[in-house]
Image (cartoon, rainbow, N blue to C red; front, side, top):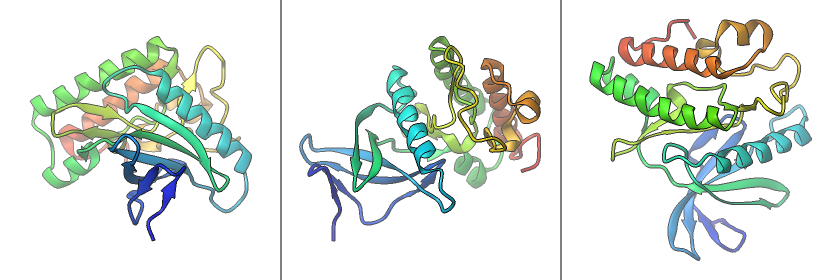
Length: 214
């Protein structure tokens, strides 16, 4: 049976996968007749439900607040059967992680072009005093038009509000292979954290392996 959310968003039969703290489904907005991606909070065993909801709401606001072609637009938010969801522009393409896995090290021009577009997104985020904190090839989508989009701002930190400690004590603040030493050791975050992750991502695009083993 086809699942319809909010009497509007008709979802595909199965989710396309899990991203960070969410589960993503593709579907269609039946009112505006356009494709969408719908991300739901994923509640793993072990509680912390309220915190996950707060982080998810925070991610939707952060993503909606960055006006840049390299960040998927947020169309709507809501709750379905007690589970918060976020409706976004459907992004078509291939994740850079999959691109490297399938084709091996990328030509220098490809890697440089991807990195340059990511820099533009980071510049917009940092200007808004936001740090992504989980930049990696798996969170970069290369579209058929050559546009690179940065996904999953679920761990982003807003520097001005001092919320870099929103994650639980002892919880990883990113993906270890791409985390700056100061983030691993002390949890400190600033725009240089993202630049380190971008450098690690660029290294992987050119060599097929991150500078620090996973």
